[in-house]
Amino acid sequence: MDIALRDRFTGLWNEYFEGAELPITFGTGEESGTVEKVPPPKSWRCMICDLGRIRKGMPRSFDEESLSCSGAMYYLGYTTERRPEFRYFLSSGRPGVVEGERYKRTPEIVDAMEQYRGEIPATGRCYLFKRWDQLTAEDSPEVVIFFARPEVLSGLFTLANFDQADPYGGVICPFGSGCSSIVYYPLLEQQKENPKAVLGMFDPSARPCIMPDVLTMAIPMKKFGKMIGYMEESFLITGSWEKVRKKIRSSAELHAR
Image (cartoon, rainbow, N blue to C red; front, side, top):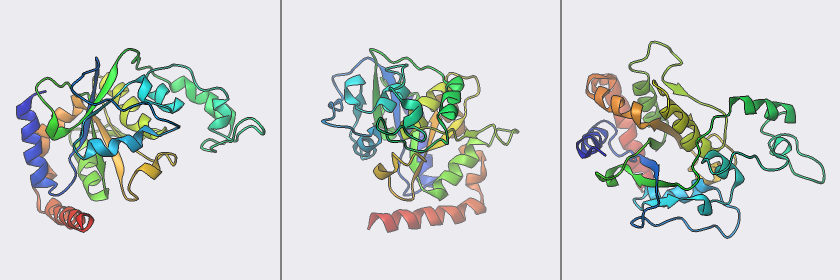
């Protein structure tokens, strides 16, 4: 990690988004003994619930053993196989076999989703999560993840579109699980020449782990570095944004009480 870039963004974030939570990041690689690994869950657990400590400044790593959810296993690249009866699980269910989440109207729609599948093989590798300000020169973050309220998201969204003529060119919002919106889709975007940021955390199954007024924006590092470079020439230096900054400060003070 370029430490100068780390510190530059931290300073700019504190100036233009004062009081807002710093993002967390992750990179993939070999397991490191310097960071505590999330232990195997005793029962089913959404990995999103394990990110709270990371957001508070406690780095953690995940590998295949850290996950109990078949969706997380799939979206983090530890398997390419869906769980048995997945087509019914995501849709209307199958009496006596599996209860449906009813996120898709029919099993056939679930089947058709598979044509959009991309792969991010991760067998033998781990995901190292750290908060932005804790990154070291040895780290290689691939995705930057913001947990943010609407005013902060408005700034990130607008900045992600700052160099885009295409109104659909800066940010995408694909359907998927909570972990897919912060890991799977951003990693697929990171592989592209012109990656997009990913707005997410709309998954009802993951929402119990998230504050009521918070969504995520996950930004491939390839794109995020450019966004940092634009901050001081963008709308962030205008009077319009100063009004939003006041709302961000007020929100931070309210939630700190």
